Amino acid sequence: QVQLVESGGGLVQAGGSLRLSCAASGRTFSMNAMGWFRQAPGEQRLFVASITWSTVGDTYYDDSVKGRFTISRDNAKNTVYLQMNSLKPEDTAVYFCAAAPYSEYYNAYYYSRPLYDSWGQGTQVTVSS
Image 1 (tube, rainbow, N blue to C red):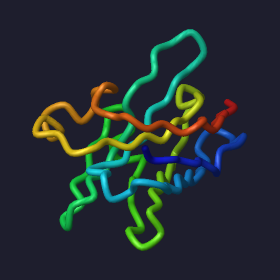
Image 2 (cartoon, helix red, strand yellow):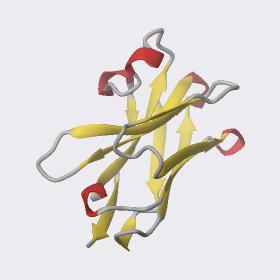
Image 3 (cartoon, rainbow, N blue to C red):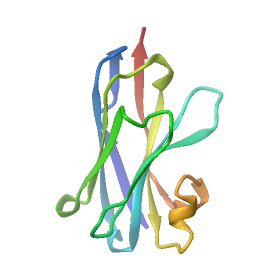
C-alpha cells in the first residue's frame, strides 16, 4: 500500500491561485500514476488531473480545468503538485490525492476511480466569489 498526504488547501478569492502537494510513502515503487480528484458537498468524487510515473510523465486533465490547472511531479521526493490558477467558486471542493498501480487500461480510463487503490485524507479548497 502507498500512503498519501496532501497539503496546500485553503481559502482564496476567485481568480486567485493555490498549489496542492501530495507526498507518497510506502510501496511507491508500485505506483504507475498519481492523480487528483475532487468532491463538492453532495456530489460524486470526480477526476481532476493525473500524471504517470513513466519517463515521459504523461498528463491528463478534466476539461473543466484545462488551461487553468497544471499537474507536475518530483520523482526524487515522490511528490505530485497541482498548481491551480484562475480559480472559480465552482472549484470549491475537497481535493483528494490518489495513486494507481500499473494497469494496461490506464491510458484509456485514467479518470476512473477504481484504477486508483491508494487515497489521501483530502484537503479543502474554498474559492470565494
